[in-house]
Length: 143
Image (cartoon, rainbow, N blue to C red; front, side, top):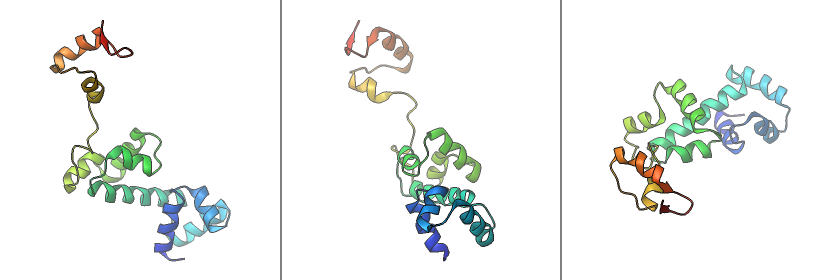
């Protein structure tokens, strides 16, 4: 099977070995032997590399980091950051910025700005602690 075909199957399998074996119609053990012979590595290692390559391509295009992580099957954003940084020696945001693909959507918010804006709170960062203490989010009224 050609490398391009394997890459297509990897995406269809959502970068999971069990799904890939099912698409190929073989057992996971047979798939492991085939990958060792063809690529010199286990299938999950190869799939992780393909998944991170897809993440890099999507980061360059300017997609939000959280969406990329979710779409590529990372259950936790921290796990995505850890794997990405281990492979690329920089965080996804640093990579996107260095490639010119980062914008405001890519940046992870440092605080819950949306909730504060919807509640009508416009304050300096030092005042937020006091405002949060005096604010009841269930009624959206000041106490």
